[in-house]
Length: 103
Image (tube, rainbow, N blue to C red; front, side, top):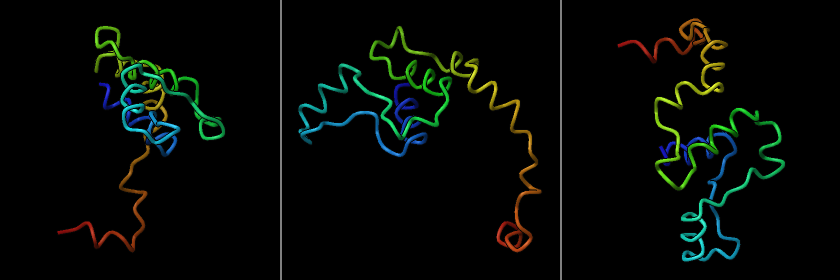
């Protein structure tokens, strides 16, 4: 679930959650082991609090305190996303692109 948190962080803002200001690998490993990350402005300003909450619950160093897959699926951010995105994706494919998807 830790890796899912890292990937979610990257997908939401475009860069990894852990970085060393001095670009020092040993320092980076220490930052990761401590689980130190931030939601940096302006990159996170438009991201919902619910999304930030889910990321925070996944990037917990102690696996016993970290969210499980079951808890992630019950998180309000995912539940809300599932209720609002019921679009039929097949209708969203432009007619000119349909030939590329047929065998």
